[in-house]
Image (cartoon, rainbow over all chains, first blue to last red):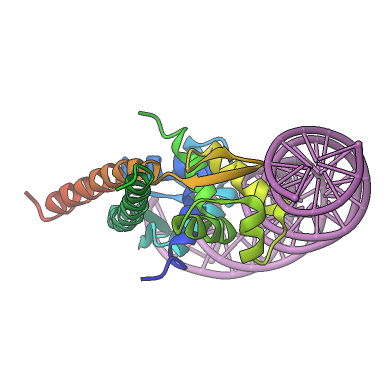
Length: 105
Length: 105
DNA sequence: AGTTAATGCAACCCTGTAGTTGCAGTAACT
DNA sequence: AGTTACTGCAACTACAGGGTTGCATTAACT
C-alpha cells in the first residue's frame, strides 16, 4: 500500500465547494445541473469538481435518461479513513516510545 | 462537529511534498533545516509547509536550543480518520436503503 | 566578543486551478 | 419533426500557493 493513491483523495477533499457537493449528494443522487440549482456556482464549475471527485474515486456516475447522475461512494471514504487511522496510530506509537526513553527506561 | 475544521486538514494532506515531510517526521522529530537536507526543496519551502501543517494541527513545534523542532501529531490524524469513517458509513447506509427501495420493499 | 548556524521575513516567478461565459452537440418528450 | 433540456468542449480571467533567492535577525558555542 502506497500513499500515492491517497494524495489525490485528500486533494479532492480539501476544497469547500467539493464538500458542499458531496454533502448534497449525500442526501441523494443528483446531476450537475441539479446541483447547480442548489449551490452558488455554475454548472460547468460543478462539472469540473465532479470530474476531480470521480478521478479520486469518491463518486461514480450513472446515466439516467438524458441526464448524468452522480452518486457518492462512502466505501472509498471509509477505506481512506482506515488507512489514515493506521498511519496516525503508528506515529502515536513512536511518540509514546520516545517518551518512555526520555523518562529513562 | 462541523466540517469547516476538516477541510484545512485535507488541504494540508493533499500535497506530495507535505506527505514527504510528514513521513520524514514520522521517523523522528526534526527542524526545517534538517528536513531540507533530506528533501529536494529549500528550507524556506519546507518552513511554509510546516506552517500549513501546524495550522491544520498535524504537527507541533518545540524549541530545542537554537533550533525549532517539529513533531508529528498522530492523534489529529486518528481523529480525522474517525470523522471520515462516520461520514462514509452514513453515506453507505443511505445507498443500501436506496437499493432496498429499488428492489421494491 | 566574534563566529557560526539556525530561524524569520519579503519580494518575486510561475504553474495550477477555481470560476466564468459562450456555444455546439445530443437525446428525451410532445 | 421540432422543441426543450441536458451534457460537452473551449477559451479566458483571476487568484492562490508551491517554489525560489536574498537578506536580516537571533541565539548558541568557543
